[in-house]
Image 1 (cartoon, rainbow, N blue to C red):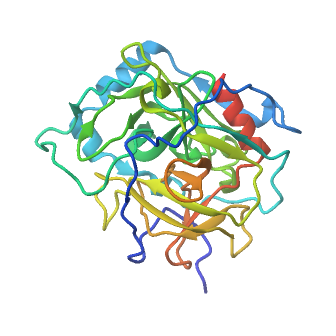
Image 2 (tube, rainbow, N blue to C red; image 1 turned 30 degrees about the vertical axis):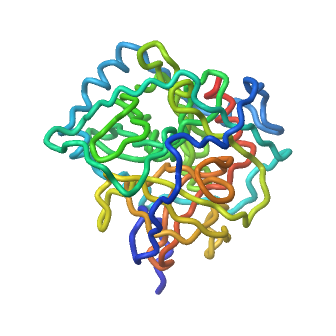
Image 3 (cartoon, rainbow, N blue to C red; image 1 turned 180 degrees about the vertical axis):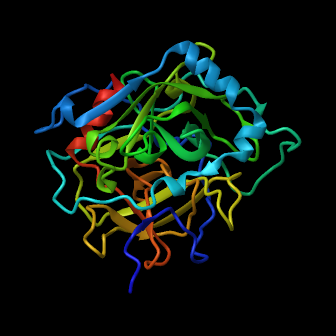
Length: 336
């Protein structure tokens, strides 16, 4: 019998492709005016759930994440195991794209966060707006990936739903984002969440089709997140079957979570029809959950999904949710 259960992101081959030619900040990102926040067609705020976090609690989170705790955090792939999916068509409205923005006040701290691991050159260049996510759920520490996206508040990060909420269940605590993480270096410091936002389909039902979330983070040294690292453009309600490039920090073997990795391919539908998610050729493992999918090649395109799950019986395939109107509304809710 084939294993059709949802499992954490799993490595089953050697399809890994090292990042090549990715700039520290994608210079091709076009500057744009602040995006207008409008409700997605056919979707209201009842489809969105959120949790506010005080600045003092956020500061406590930054202090909580010592180098030892970051190094010991578990891959969040276990949080996706056994989830159910919706095979009904996701609400799709008018196709929308919002252009990304480049950093305008970038301040590199040169901070090193993992003690005993001196900075050293790596053959895999970082991307300033992509980073690692750390959080606590059920008393355990976890690690995921995330990406800074263009937003009216200049402080919004995309990730997977299971990197924010148990689905169904409680929201994560001690949630932080470390952009451009590389071999223990955090050149832009650590940004703590002030709000976590996810579709109700995930937070109340654990529906894998909607495994996307957004976090609003506090400023660092008085400078907003996207002013420092830039923000990817976002796209919603796009055609299915597009070509994607996915990024993340896989931490489970054969990876170690210290470097950014990528893979790419043309998307295909869930072969079992158990979700409306799409899959691409990829062998990234747990820890890469929540990493961005960009339309086309490279890291300077429009983000249109995130790393979500795999099937034990489908080799070398990463699945990501279709970004329709519900996820668009979650984004609009977060960016305000």
